[in-house]
Length: 342
Image (cartoon, rainbow, N blue to C red; front, side, top):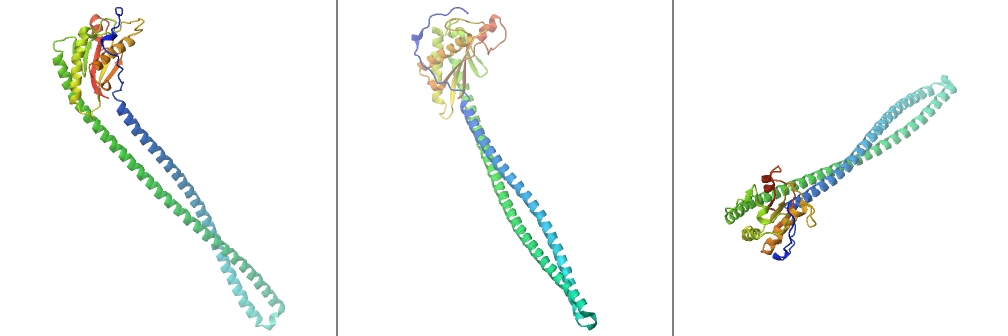
């Protein structure tokens, strides 16, 4: 590109627009919703995990208590059987003692022996009664502990079900909010498409007959030579006139678009692949950005609200066409205007 010319800063005022990214609002809302969803999921998972662990621990305790209870019941049954056997033996000995007492021929020795056996069996019987009583007490205590554990498990199950229900309700609310947000955004996008079509139609009428100004997709494209001298960010008289028409169209558009639709006119600067390296513009990045800024600042000076403008420079890294021939270089040196959501 040719060398730079002197900057004509006095042609229009210095205004710095607020740069607003076209999708920042949507990203912030989606990020906020996802944060809420992830926090809800995290706490619900932690709560459910703690309850599951407590439930497993209580189930292990129940299994242990059931095993102990089974053993104690076995001991109790054995003691009861032994007690019954001792009672039968005692009864038999008492009968035998009664018989022996009725016969004088049996003698004192036999009677004494029978009395000793009866005393021994009576002592053993009392011992077994104590063992059986202790076993029954243990069984009763184990039954009480088992009942308490089952109540705890029931409470944990109820809390777990309530937590799962609350989590499901939160997920349903998030999904509903997301659907409503998407529907609202879709409506705004559709409305903005209609206004963009009207806006571009008006620009076509204002700039009719200009082959160096055209519509490419959803963008209105000015060749750089229409607005700027080679290697400069100062607009030509012809470029200023075109921007006056653009400013009028934007101001008229602002009065037509409803306030609830967040829109902005994005101004993108592009260069060709030929490098520039001057004190003012060390690279094509600086030149493309400076040209986009010049357009934005001039539009502001003509009454366009700064909050409806965005400027960006892409250098040579977003070409319309590939190649290094003169036609490709010409098409890639451009300023693009795009009506978009903020």
